[in-house]
Image (cartoon, rainbow, N blue to C red):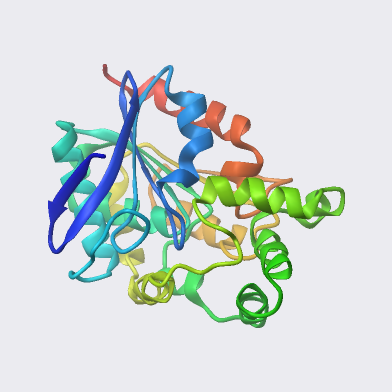
Length: 272
């Protein structure tokens, strides 16, 4: 079990595959396991690093701060531990915000930036809209099967869920996410507060030299497409794509398509 000890936490990470390095950063309440579909699909072409953010999963104990800046420093330290001078960086949801901060802190170390279902301003992702409040209650209260099904509504488009075996899908998704969907990790609220405090919008113009791809799901109720467009507009030269049949869990729901898009995006800019 590879661990990097730093700043009051033992950071758990994994390396898989061979080729140009790719750092994968997860979002709120999700461990490194959330990238399993990408590791499976891309390890034949890239060396991939996944890790548990501080305070979740196997990155324990966490005596240091829970902030976007601290988690971006964790990511940089893990690149050092792997001996990577630079890497492509992929971030999903809060992980996309961490990826932006990492690129701002050390732009020379980021070869390409893929920002999936994320935002320029953390408060957009942490905003307690009526839908978010309602869904948060449903994922925390009531029978466990109902809580699992409520969580699915955050990840998958409604049309996808209409024809799915919801209990089976919840079990399969839980294995990928790294936990039973009926349970909430203790650090979740700290992560949410850290996200809400972070706003790098005014600095994103500094990332114009880094090839950047922004992908939003048309049915994403958390990282709405408008947030993705605003993020891409703030980064000179960034490409924005809105995927019509996707929601917040696009990296799971459309894993093969995401893997192909990432490989295509990174291949022209890599140096082995």
